[in-house]
Each structure stands twice: as C-alpha cells, then as structure tokens.
Length: 390
Ligand SMILES: Cc1cc2nc3c(=O)[nH]c(=O)nc-3n(C[C@H](O)[C@H](O)[C@H](O)COP(=O)(O)OP(=O)(O)OC[C@H]3O[C@@H](n4cnc5c(N)ncnc54)[C@H](O)[C@@H]3O)c2cc1C
Image (cartoon, rainbow, N blue to C red):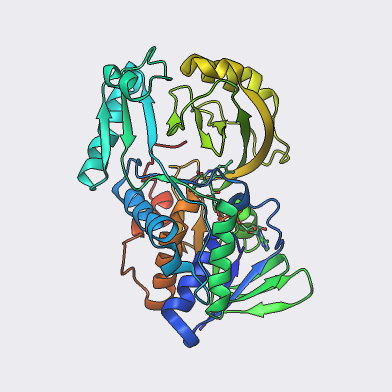
C-alpha cells in the first residue's frame, strides 16, 4: 500500500510514524514537505502547550494520549537508537478564569472534564488569592486549574522528533511542493510536485496545516480551513514573580512562564476574527492595544512588562466548530484529512496520527474512535463544537 502525505509538520510526521509503526513493510510512506526548515510551519511557531481542559470528551482523550507521547513516555515513543528525547517538557496546569457571564460555560466544561477523568480543580474567587497572590481576582466569578497531564514543551523539537522517528521506521521525506492532485472519478491517483515528479499512491493525506484548503483545491474539493495569524510575545518582568500556570483571562489574553520570563498572546473572540492569510509578521501594536492593559489588570506586577521579542504563526482555523477535520473527504474517499486543528494540533498530533494510520490500514479506528471528527458532520450541518478555544 502506498500512502502520500502532503506536509511534514507534526501532523504529517505523526501520521507517517504511526503508519510505519502499525503497517511496517507493507506500507510505503512518502511525506512531501516543501520546507524542511519549517520556517512558516505552525508546529515550529506554536506556544507548545498541552491541556486536559477541553469541552469534548474526545479532545480530552486525544490530549491524554498526547501527554503520554510528549510528556510521560517520550523516550518510549520517540527515541531513535536509544537516544534520550529532549522536548523540554514542563509539567504545569492551565488556569481558566471566568467572569459571571462565563461561569456557566466553565462549569459545563468542568463537568465534562471530570466525567472524562481529568484532574481539574474548581476554584471560587476566594480560593485564588491564597494560591496565586500575584493575581487580581477582580471581576472573576470562578476558575479551573488543571492538576495533572498539562504543561508545555518545545514544539519545534517535538515535530523534529516525530519526523526523526518516522524516518527511522522507514518513512521517506521528499523536499518539494505538491502543486497538483490528479483525480479519476471519486479517487485521487497521483500528485504532481514542483520538481516535475509525479507520484502515484493508493491514498493521500492532507496534512498541509494552515494550507489544507489550498491543497484540497488542487483536486477541486472544499476543506474549510483558514490561516489566521496569531502573534506571541516573549516578555520580561523586572518585578520578581513566581512561575505561573498557563492563565486564560476572560479577555482572551493568555500568558504563562517561559524560562525566566513569560510568553503571552491573544485569541480574538467571536466577531473579532482577523482576515485570512495575513503575512507572518508579528503584530506589535497588539501588545499596547490589547495585551498589556489586560495583563496589567490581571497581574499588577505586569505593569512593568517589557517586550523582548515577538513572532507570528498561523492557527489553522476550522470556523465550523473549531475542531479538526479527520478521515476521508466526503467526495473523495482516498483523500484523508488531518487538518483544521484550530490551535490545538500539536498536542493532538499523536492521537490524530495514530487514528489516521488505523483508518488507512484497517478501515476503522481501534485505539480511539475519531469518527466524530469526520467531515460528514460538515455536510450534515452537525457541528462537534469545541467551546474552549484559546
Ligand atoms: C501562535 C500559535 C500557538 C499555538 N499554540 C499551541 C499550543 O499551545 N498547543 C497546541 O497543541 N497547538 C498549538 N498551536 C497549533 C499547532 O501549532 C498546530 O495545530 C499544529 O502545529 C499543526 O501541525 P500541522 O503539521 O498540521 O501544520 P504545520 O506545522 O504548519 O505543517 C504543515 C506543513 O505542510 C507543508 N505544506 C503545506 N502545503 C504544502 C504543499 N502543497 N506541498 C508540500 N508541503 C506543504 C508546510 O510547509 C508545513 O511544513 C499553536 C499555533 C500557533 C500559530
């Protein structure tokens, strides 16, 4: 069986890894990646964090497996020739903060998380000051804190480790851009590359990240994924502060410790979305206009923050329900999707890669049923909504 994967970021590489792990010599895996430096790839530009605090049981289960591969057993899954895997994993919780208006949603999410076995603590505002004396509880009605299976890591190293492991198992990477996909009826037959090569395959995986819609358009089908720029700021704070969890403020601003300083960003809320495909230049005005006021209001010591550097990457947004598209395209069964992760794809790469590999090799899911993420939900207009989008 020949599988061609478009895109060798974390998702494409995790898919390659699991295809070889589960399929061995009976599967030929070609990963076509146009830029092996990953300069614009989301996997290299992310905030590299993992959480249990989602609003659907499936996303929680996907993170649970992600935590195993990234956090607790990285050597077991990713080591090549016995070399230790260095992902700089920092175990630390997310702290979600809610106003009165957001309290019911926070409670509903917390109930889902608790039922799914996630170790998440509910905190009334009065419980915040003893735990986090540096935080202002002004305007807050409740909070939740992840007590285990959350943290952060180096996203670029993780994507590299997935690739290295996939290669060690026999996957082949080719540096080229896919520029065309040939279709015969309801099947794809070959991919045209920009170096003139035509590669035939039995199935094709769309792991093109923020460019998944563009890849799909090469065979005349729609995949609603949009590249939305997100700027991350690295910050220094002259006022000494203890290490913080990854704090999600009701304003949409988030921050967490990073080394001796902090990183922070902002997720626009409904109706605030920015245009697609903006150039990947950091939006420096965002700090003064949006981040600083919110950060200084929440953490008085942040009044003294200094921007050290900033970078931008693309969220690969699925505006339909902010969840991934996984599985066969409704119009082309052998064009399998693994995209649209809407900002949580790094932590879900292991579960997505394993699921896509199972689907391709066995025609069904074995470890975790990913069928709620199939694209037919779009056709049926039945969103599988993720409410906790950061
Ligand atoms: C600022 C920011 C913060 C984030 N924070 C987190 C976080 O904390 N936790 C988390 O889990 N996720 C986070 N994410 C999301 C996460 O980074 C992505 O969901 C994930 O990296 C997607 O991986 P991918 O492999 O699909 O995409 P990418 O890493 O973008 O890889 C896609 C690859 O496809 C290649 N490609 C595209 N088209 C073609 C073509 N035609 N031919 C050949 N190659 C092609 C590209 O070159 C690229 O390398 C964040 C993202 C951003 C931008």
